[in-house]
Length: 71
Image 1 (tube, helix red, strand yellow):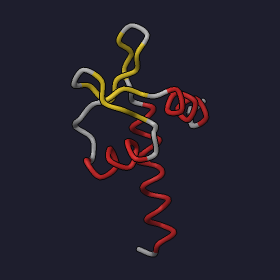
Image 2 (cartoon, one colour; image 1 turned 45 degrees about the horizontal axis):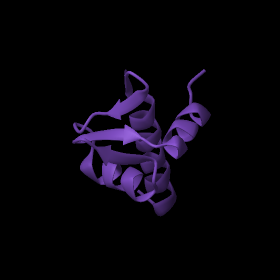
Image 3 (cartoon, rainbow, N blue to C red; image 1 turned 135 degrees about the horizontal axis):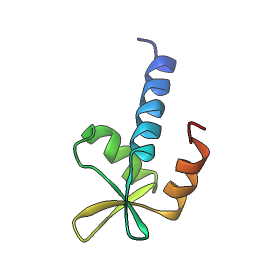
């Protein structure tokens, strides 16, 4: 795979992870079962953060989730 294809694949994985967040009250939680490297990228970009042992979307992550909505 060339570099562009890898970037596109990682971007698609990140969008898929954001979109699969489940609601827990007013918080959107991400499963730790996703690819650890992609989770690390989401953390590094500030799209998710750890709170009380859970991975939750930040306001920036929620905004990105809306932008990548499949509908």
